[in-house]
Figure (cartoon, one colour):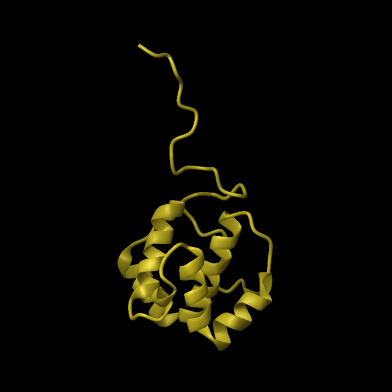
Length: 117
């Protein structure tokens, strides 16, 4: 019998920064944190959606398919351990689309330890 100790469960920690799991790392309207991303997200949300889907490892067209960004947000929440529901994902993207898209891009960048573009 092995006495190996598990010090880190798969899927927890290990992000580029010390981010509190269970929550988004920025607020919905924190666009001042990354103006270039927010400019693209507000002027051409489809381009930012395609870029994020591709960066996340999905087909780039996912950003333009109806419901694609909801699926991406849901998968992102599960990957990063952020609390929420699929219904909330759909409602946030429907009512606050560009702002939520920008927050998702910031979250992906922060969790991967990337600096502002």
